Image 1 (tube, rainbow, N blue to C red):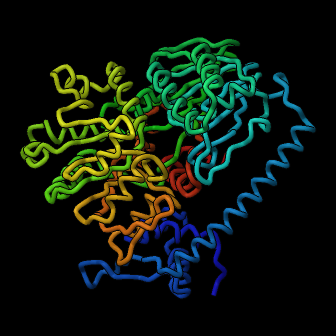
Image 2 (cartoon, rainbow, N blue to C red):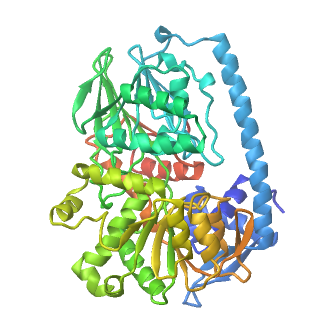
Image 3 (tube, rainbow, N blue to C red):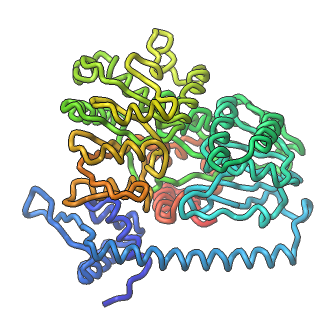
Length: 561
């Protein structure tokens, strides 16, 4: 029996995520040959960790689903701990090396070549984005985000330059994994300028206020932080060039991820260089958002790779599927629970539920959704606040949404839409009979009001849960997805064991990130190929899969930061 290595672990991870997937897709995701894949699969089957189940309708076709057994799940949990411990040890060793080098060679503005790029966060993880560019005697930070889940962030004290030496900070969008360390940065001495779009500047304040409230920051400290943030943060237009100091200039383009999201081009006249940071890229044809702008020509492209190994469902397919699920779910007068993130996902859902109710073709296809007075309730204080901000930012919506608004159809405020603004409203909603559609946070069921809703509603088979976003490992959302429909399936919510008897659905088309095809197509729109591409903001298998596809198209790509 061969030893179990990291390839076997990654294979277990992929099978837990998508058991019914072709061997060719598995091999591509792992970056191995079909022969190597079959070798690994046989080892897992022999250990009793995986079962092969024939699922092809054609009995002569060898097509199998590989299902993790209980022993396989236990083994994967043990391997997860083992690999995390190893990664943490490697990380600690690296930090010791960095600390030793910094003591031997302290960084001076004049001692570095121009330009030089440091990945302080998000280089090989999905969260914690933070990149430092040293060029023309300037220190420029692109994003300053929180690391979440198992991701780890480099302590600010270990950065190659102190915050007081940073001249500019660019914020690509208002998600906390790109801006959540702003309070820490300002407290550590940052006194430069923060540059972003007008819409992101508006969204930063409620997002950070909610984050500080969860950290129980005292009122005086919070007011001091927001006063400083207001003084140093500037909003700029898309597709206009603006000057910085020392011969540098910048330009922002639409990224299509959430409202206000941007990619950032930084360029120098002398010495000449152009470096483009993609930020988080969205998919085309996303509700409310203009499509991403074509990337500007550059020498060096720093490209996100969150879904570099996956393909998403299309927008038309997802609206169709949402209508079908809602019709089926509400026919028996149950409740539909939709865990959703407050920024971006909540507003997209409201838009598409409005389309299901008002679009003539969709009304004919799903008559139940507008013939019955079925309430749609947003039970998320932050989601409600951000939806109000979205309303004020309607000049930044895409043409389709602006045309609807001009015609008197506000897609974010339609008849039958209600707000649960306080906890008393929430309790009434939880005790109310169906039918109803309830949108509440958090998106992965790790906290927020959705926990109480699920605690009282998961046991009722008349109810439904619709997941519209990624459910990370170890979250209640992932457990509900995994154990729904299994005998005795349950989830732990606030320490209580809740049986899962409600129907559970997953819509894959609501990701705010471009998939592999979207990323490749976006890069291909560049007028000329960049000299090099550095992949960031993705797990290793996603970066490697995307790097392989880009190299096949003739690009010079680094998947290691």
